Length: 150
Ligand SMILES: [Zn+2]
Ligand SMILES: [Zn+2]
Image 1: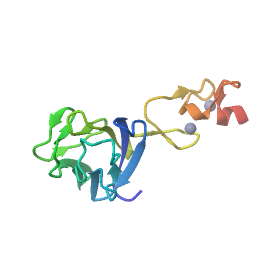
Image 2: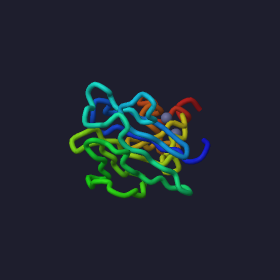
Image 3: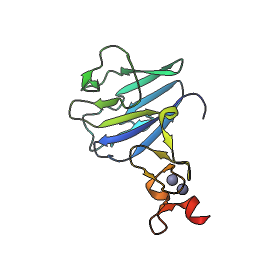
Image 4: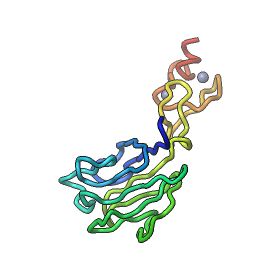
């Protein structure tokens, strides 16, 4: 992927469970339709239309508030100056508003069978001992799909 990419795992808010991906010099968050990471325009009302942005410097993103109404929080602390972002940081748009957990693509484990990201939940295949995602384990064969098919 071009440049650095981020995965945004929605941990609360009306889009809970969704994962957004974005890359580039600047990644924007908010309820407006042109945002890279969009919240529900009707329900996530603590998020502003243009809430926050992430600016790439070298290989690191910096989080800054975009003049939001209810403020931007990084791991619970208000973002008053640009703050360096690391994997597993939690960005919240407005106190009590939607939260996303952020992963740099380079830090995300990929399932060796399907190549999809494995965020937390995985199973170790007893045959090849690789950690695979839940979709890629064959429960009857008690092995990953690669090993079960071999
Ligand atoms: Zn998989
Ligand atoms: Zn296996």
